[in-house]
Length: 294
Image 1: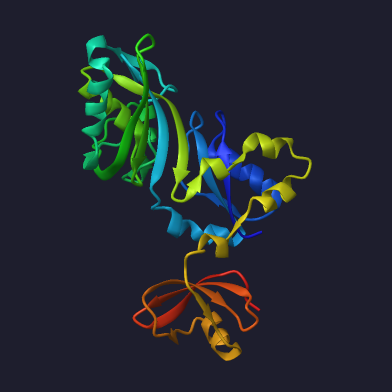
Image 2: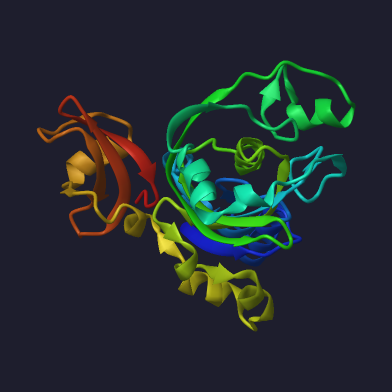
């Protein structure tokens, strides 16, 4: 089984929990792209078998989230998992729809963002959350991110909560975004809920829920039914068919002269069987992901 299965991760499970479950069912090498915290839900692409080789193409995917921001309280982890370390009043007048939309829109575009201390970013060989748990101070560098679109979904003035949707680049921390939005509303806040609805072209509408997987009598068959094969992932890439001699050279790592534009191509043998992917650079074709080597 080689490819990707899009899982809708529920609350209470780590990304590793899902990987372990799928690995146990399939007996294959399994990985994932884009960790989701236990309290977060939504799209988690699971890479199976030689699909794990796709991670280099998926790591930079843009993402879409639905978020609940709680105002008036700040936690040490910037989400609901942490302990409250600060409280501030919230000016209800600032929670007018037009004002919140103006604040949200002020985050559009490229900008520098400070990642939260409770994150897996490594500094001097240690993850930030390791420093944070020990109460150690460490200098953290801000990173460039981009907010492509941000939309207000609703406001609950009674519970001081803002609901919004955000489309953003790789590396964007929604917990930091929530704190920054709260700051521009002259208060503090934290990320109460997070649902990832899209990763690249992988949508929550096409995902397999973990509940469906747990309740299935034939879990492996269900996974196979939802498997996106490697040739499906590169559906928009052009095809190249190689003859027996050229294919042998290609599989052995020899670069093949190919006068086509640079890019990723789907490679087929003379029997029109999908072999894997190849990359053309400067009119030279080299092997990339190989799933069939006969």
